[in-house]
Length: 355
Ligand code: NAD
Ligand code: UD1
Image 1 (cartoon, rainbow, N blue to C red):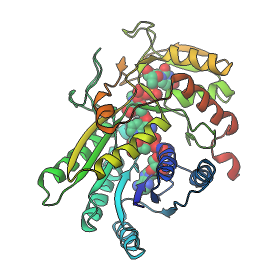
Image 2 (image 1 turned 45 degrees about the vertical axis):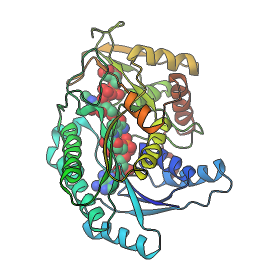
Image 3 (image 1 turned 135 degrees about the horizontal axis):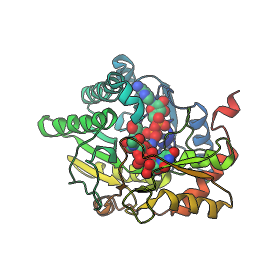
């Protein structure tokens, strides 16, 4: 049974992926600073994993720490070797992800996202672990056109957050092309991850006012926010609102175990893959589907376009489907139903049960 290091594994995508990895049969070491997550998430992951698979023997070991801490990271790798469970691959989620904050604090974003990643790759290399799945983002593409984005589309991030994601991809390419050793690398470029595990036990728990559409809709539907502001009604789309590619977080989680399996079957590889559904949904379509599936109201008003927004971002996901033998299977209705179940069961996210 292989041991995988998951950085940032207690966060939104990380916690869902840990569940998928445990159920797949991996042992996990999860390193997280908890700067943007709760200690409750992984406790629930362990509980869910046992319920889903009565015989689950897999372990999840948590380490509180920062990816910029060289000594700590080295210790994690060395101890795993001592325990006869060497870390064979890393899934690297840890980082900061707010576009708006990155514009205000570019030094912080380059430090955590780029310097933190460089530190991690250095320790991996020193410990002969050269297999990595990295959380990249569709935000690295140049402003989209009407076409679906392929992995060969132009790369031109327009904010510091996106630039740090591209910088890490470039660093990984340098390692792949120039190292004497074989690296196996998958840069997964996520589109819009939303929803929650179908149990409603784990989900997205924004610590502050959400910037993204889906958690905002959930908070309006439950009454913690008065109304949704729809940013622009005059986009060049059929109903005038922005179009995105919303992917269920469990479909995204499963793409990580598929990517690991693929990398383990190769000697050396560098992969860039779009992880999306290939289907575009407008803001109004998402609101209407949410209302219909859950029998609730999401009051909204139209407001001005948000700075930096684009009209449409949708993945061409054919390369992922072909390469990984993976395919998103959950619908927009599943996303709305599961996201709402999480919100209803946890109106204040994870924070409710800690106070
Ligand atoms: P998240 O904030 O919920 O999870 C990130 C986790 O990393 C958190 O648990 C946080 O505490 C931890 N972390 C942050 N800085 C750290 C550090 N220096 N050392 C150790 N741990 C640290 O975010 P998420 O939505 O789960 O995103 C996971 C990854 O996917 C991020 O790298 C993000 O940039 C990327 N991504 C997210 C989205 C999205 O829409 N959520 C889209 C594209 C890419
Ligand atoms: C945002 C980030 C992007 C990041 C992605 C996933 C910006 C400019 N871009 O993209 O870098 O990769 O999240 O984390 O922040 N909307 C509303 N009202 C709201 C919120 C959003 O109408 O309150 C609209 C937006 O205009 C957009 C759609 O909903 O059309 C989706 O927005 P959002 O969830 O923020 O995702 P992205 O814009 O794709």
